[in-house]
Length: 183
Image (cartoon, rainbow, N blue to C red; front, side, top):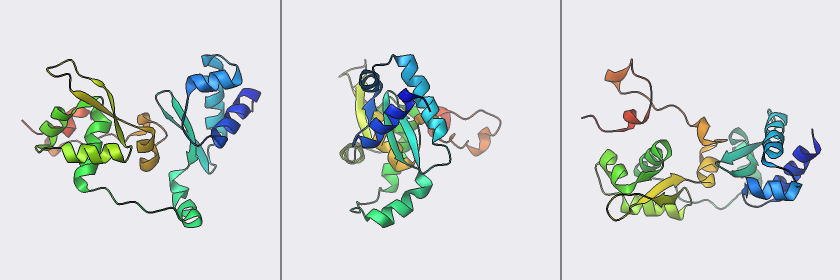
């Protein structure tokens, strides 16, 4: 393992929060390419181990592999928080697959008002405002967070499962269309 990769591993292990790529560049006195290469080296070195490198855009975090979370939970006995409702999971799926997405689009897909569900997901740090739309009133655009990746056990958004197809669209490729209401 290279010196930069080892340094990044130590930094991520010691950090209590996700770090930006530029923070890792500054801490290791390396350019973006060197840090990207070191992260890939670290990711490969951690395959089959108890932790993994998680990445959400330019945020990087070292976390427990999802399949080992039960053992860690039993050992540390963290405070239990309430479970998400089916409506929250549905809303979260829409945000994850269609981000950045305005509330109006989420409500079009779900067919109901989503204010309270969105507020709940924001309070749980699973979604966040990632920008403003260009339409009337410049609506908030929602996207997922690093916490979303942690809760769902994903290394990055690239590891989201492909949406299931509607039964009558079996020969069409998966995509955002499969999450919308049938016209």
